[in-house]
Image 1 (cartoon, rainbow, N blue to C red):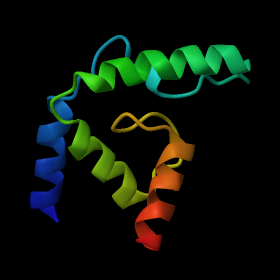
Image 2 (image 1 turned 90 degrees about the horizontal axis):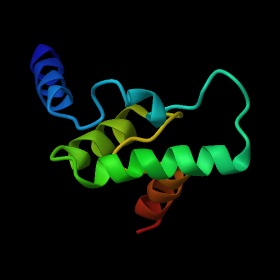
Image 3 (image 1 turned 90 degrees about the vertical axis):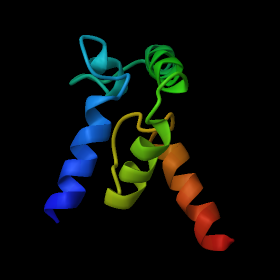
Image 4 (image 1 turned 180 degrees about the horizontal axis):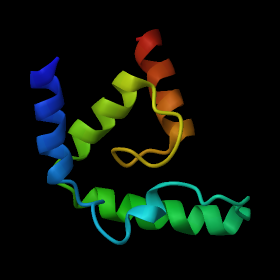
Length: 89
């Protein structure tokens, strides 16, 4: 399991979401208005679009069943839909 942890740490260190703008990838501690959520998620997805480890990030989120935030350019609903389509294929 240690190898998997090291590999995960390596891609996470290269992720474009690291740094002061990381908060846009997760909902705030208060209830967001719909427009606020949409703007926050679009900003996060724009950052993901240029990320060199986007596919690693998405696969990680799918593997662990991440329920919150933007991972690999998809929000929790989009990841759930993707998993559903994958199981039907």
